[in-house]
Image (cartoon, rainbow, N blue to C red; front, side, top):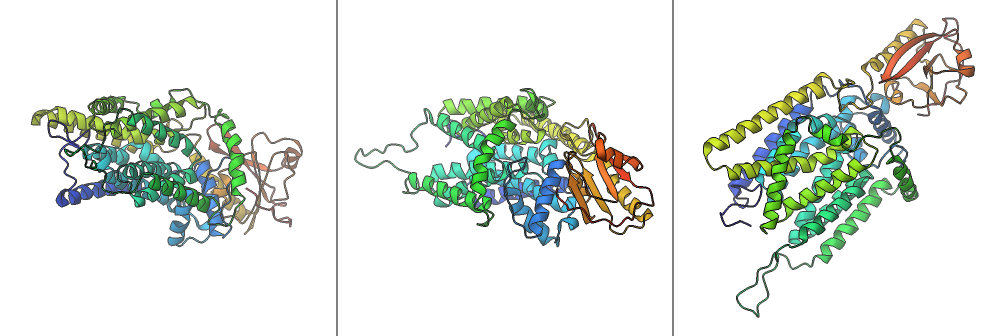
Length: 530
C-alpha cells in the first residue's frame, strides 16, 4: 500500500516487487550478500578451540554416526534440530565416526545456515521492504555477533533462521491464507522448538505482537460502490481457520517426527514434560546470572546501531498511526517483548543475544529507509550512504578482531567460559608421553566433575574412561584430573609427574604420567562414559 506521496510503506522506497527485472535484480543482490557472508565465515574455521557446548554437540553427532540415534536429554542439552542438518552434512564429507570429525566439518552447518539467513531476508522484502532487508542482510553478513556465533557448533544460528522463517511464512499465511505458507509456518515453528526450548518465549512474543498490531487496523477489504455487492476479499477464498489448523497440524507432526528421531524413541514426550521444571530452575541462573542490561552491552557497544534502530522504531510507529500497514510496529513489539523477557531472566549467555539481533537489524533497516525517504537531495543521500559504509567498516573491523584475531581471548565478550588454547597441547603431550613409554594404545582415566570438552580432544584415543571425583577410577596408564585431587586418588598419584593445562578461565587440568616402570602395566581398559 502507498501513502499520499506515492511511496511504499517503511522500508519499501523505490521497490517495484511486481517487475520481473526488479525481482531478478533483488535476488542477485541478496545472493551476492549471502556469498559475502559465506566468504567472511569460512576462513580459519578450525582455528578456535572447541567450546564445551560445541564438544557436547560434536559427541552427539558422533553417536548418530555410530547409528545410536538421538535421545533427548534436557540436562544441559537441547533438541535434535541442529543434528538433522549436521549429520547428513558430515556424512556427505566422508566422515564415518566421532574420531574422524573435525572442527571445520562441524562448524560448516552453522556457517551455511548463517549465510542462508541472508536469502531469507531477501524473501522478506514484500513484508518489510527492500531497504530494511538489505540493511539487515549486510548487518548479518558483517557484524561480529552473527559472524562469531554462525561459526559456533551450537543451535542458536539455526534457531534465528527458523524464527525469521516463521515470521515470513506466518505473515504470508495471514495475508493470503495460503496452504503452503501455513505448512511452512508450522514447520518453522517445529524447527524452532527442536532447536531450543526457549522457542515458547518467541511464540508468546509473536502472539503479543500480532494481537497488539491488529488493534485499530484498517479494514483490508474496501467497500464497493454497489452496496449489494460483496467487498473484495483476499486472492484466495480459503477461510483463515483452515491455514491455522494446517499450521498447527504440521507443527505437531514435525515436532513429534524430530523429537522421536523419526519414530525411534516415543519416550521422549515424558522427557519433555520433565524438562519444564528443569529449565524453570535453570532460568534462575545456576552460576550464569547477569544484570538486566547485559545484552544491550553485547549488542551495541558503540550505541550507533541503537540510534539507527530508534529511527526505525519511530518510522514504524508513525506508519502504524497513519494506517499504512502494521509489520513495522509488530516487529517493534516483538523485539521489545523478547528483549524484556530475556533481560529479566537471570540466566544469560552471550549467544542468546543473537535472538535480539534479528529485530534490531531489521529496525536499523527501517531507520535507514526512513532517513533515505526523508532526505530528498542527492548530497544528503550520499551522506547517509557514506555514514552507512563507515558503520559497516567499523563493524567489519570489530569482526576481524573478535572473530579471527582473538576468538578465545578472555577479554572477548563473545568467548564466554571458552576453552583455552593451552588445552590444545594436552592431546599432543599425551601422544608424546605414550611414545616415550612405548604405549601404542594408552589407557586414560579422566577424573573430574565436568570433563568437557575432553571427550572431543581425546577422541583419537580409543581407551578413555570418565569418573566423578567421588568414584574409584579404574587402572590406567595416564590420569587427567582437576587441581583439587585428594583422598585415595591423591595417594595413588603421589609418584606421578604432573603437567598443567588451562582448560578455560580459572580452571586447570592436570595430566599425570607414571614412572616408566609402571607405564606398561597390564590392566583392563576403562569404559568410556562421557
